Structure formats: C-alpha cells, structure tokens
Length: 350
Ligand code: ALL
View 1 (cartoon, rainbow, N blue to C red):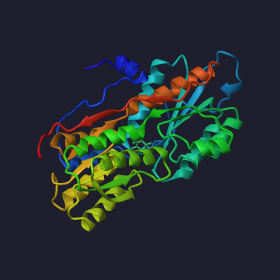
View 2 (cartoon, rainbow, N blue to C red):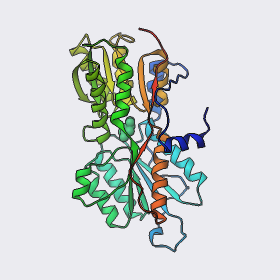
View 3 (tube, rainbow, N blue to C red):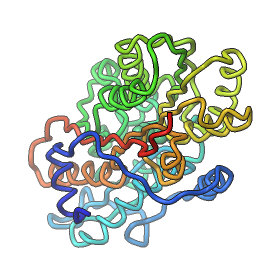
View 4 (tube, protein in one colour):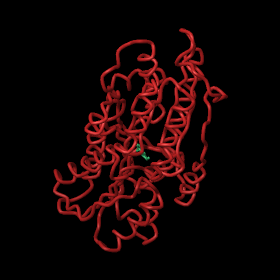
C-alpha cells in the first residue's frame, strides 16, 4: 500500500494510473444502506481547529494565520464526509499555517442553504472560501459578494460555469477531476460486459451541476462508442432515495434493460436496491462514481461493475493548498486537474 504522502504527490502530479482493481469485504444490501444512512449526520461548522469565533484575520498583522472555510455540499453523502476528514487531518498537521472551518449542507438540492453558508463565511470574515458548489451557476452571485468583501475563492470538485463567472467578472481557480473522462472510463468498463444493442439507462446528478453534466456525457460517449441503446436519461439528484425511485420506474418501463449508469455511488446504491426489489440482482449491471466504502461489498459481488475514485480526501486539501499559496502572495495557479482511478469489480460472473 502506498504511503499517504506518496499518494498525495502522485495525485497532485495527476499520474495515478487507470484500471486499478480493488475489492474489500462483503456485506448485505440492507447493511450497506444503513451504513450510508448512518453517515447522514448533519454537522454545521465542525471546526478543524476547535473554534469558529468571528475574527478579522484578513486585516490583521502580517504573519497572522489565515482562516480558511471549506464549503461542501451534502454531508449526507459519504463522499463529503471523506473530504471533510481529509481537510481536518491536513489542518491538524499544518495547524501553524492556517485555521479551518468545515461546513456543508443537509440536502443535495437545497441550493439556498449553500448560498447562506457562503454569506455566513463572509460575515465571519474568513480569508478564503474553498467551495464545492452544489450548482454551477446559482452560487456565483454569493461568491462575487465574497470576493467583493476581500475573500479569496477557490473552486473544487464541481466547476463553476465559465460564462456566468465571466458575466460576474470573477476569476476563480479550479481544482478537480476531468469528470467526462472519468465517466467514460467507467462506461467502458461496463461496455466490456454488454453486447452492442443492449438497452441501458443513465441516472444523472443535479442537472445544473457541471460535473453531473460531464459525467452524463462521459457515460454517453462510452455507450455510443460501444453501440449500446440508451433508452432513458434521468436525474436522480445525486440522492440514493430519488435514484431508487427513478431506477424502479425505468426498470418497469424497460423490463429488458441491461444496465444502469449512475453518476455517483449513492445513486448506484439506490439503483441496486431497486434491482434487488424486482429480484434481478446480478442480471442488471450497475456502475457508479466516487468509490465510497458503502459500494465496496457490491463491487466484490459484481452487483456494481465499476466506479471512479476521485480521491475525496485530497480534493479539498489541494484546494486549501492553492488558497494558501495565493494568500501568501503567489499568483493564482492555473486550473488543476486531479486524478481519477477506475475501480472495477473483480467478480468474473457473466
Ligand atoms: C459531486 C461529487 C460527487 C458526489 C456529488 C453529490 O460534486 O463529485 O461525486 O457524489 O457531488 O453531491
């Protein structure tokens, strides 16, 4: 196993290889779903440094520690818990360099909640906001406001819309993966197990999230190249429950469906549960994105064919490091593309 430091360096350089296979443990679907549900803990303002007292370090003496706010999306998603843990560990190891405020939202779809978070960070006069925006357009005005208040903004994970940023006169560095390419690779792993002409469906994220759009395109690239018949493309809002209902409806409309391509693992779990409910486990293939721990038993059994590890634990860390550089006076780094690893089932059943 690579040591963490090594891994960090490799990912930073974007040279992690594709095609790695992982497989760990086994478990039942209901256990999985409840594990995921246990993660649905809503925790506002978990401070990486213990306190989140208002302060004005932007304007304090040179050498004062900057305060960085990490603004994530739904903490009901294991992906963001992993991201938060990574950021907190990094802060603990670098407590002399910066203070950290970690926060997130309750629901994937509550965009207003994330806008409020940004406003709260502005009111707290943090030095930088490192944000994984829930929506690529709707967050821009709040971020413009933050910038006007002298706060540095770094965009991670889900890219803000280039046109809307330009209209707002905002330049925001981006740190995150190439989602289209990652999804295409996941789709290609699935295509190897399908026959041309097979019916497949795509369950996407929130339609206004750029990374969700890119993943849909990547899935489509792979399916079209392999001659599959995409019979339905619908949004599951990134959520397990929503995706469960969407998958159930697609399955009843297309009884001969062969695969469901889900833009994240939570939705893949929801789809797996819908497949199980009609007694077709193992007959309908599923892919996801994120490599959260909850999908690993399904990967082991071949119920999920592939997912993409985008290293949630390091994404925010990279954004924080970029923010620290800029705060030190270095020029803003160019957009940085982080690595994605494709994790495939080792189960050979067919
Ligand atoms: C995206 C992430 C994840 C995640 C989703 C849900 O921005 O990249 O794949 O599952 O947010 O909010």
